[in-house]
Length: 171
Image (tube, rainbow, N blue to C red; front, side, top):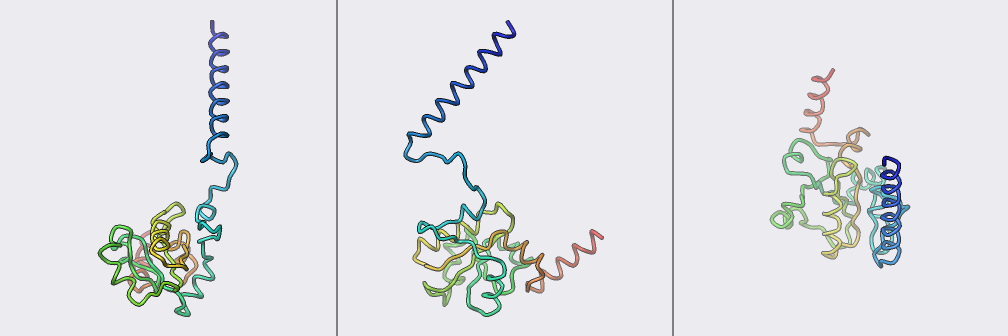
């Protein structure tokens, strides 16, 4: 009886897998079985161009004033600290704060959106919305806040105080 149950279970799993693979192969929107699921691969424009901006280039553009940085995190996190050249524009407040945050920003200006965490999609959502609105040069700094802070790049004074307080508490 035990052998029969194992055999039937194995056959059922094999049959279900075969049906799933066959169905996937004939669908027009099939799921790739082998793919790069990283955030960099996910952040592609329809043209195939990557939306990701490297940290070094982002720093250069921030320092020279050649880009507008948008912090997609909540206003509370922005107040605790942000990249020194950043403006706050969250997904939730984009409709009410858009005019203020985007004042003076042209459609061709380089815009860098960031949030915090490897899997944070707030900056991606904001960047895609901006592209849909006609902004042509939008990039995403993946895991922007953490990477910026860890690299010791310029941040708001409030953030410096907050981070040094955290360090004192954990030492």
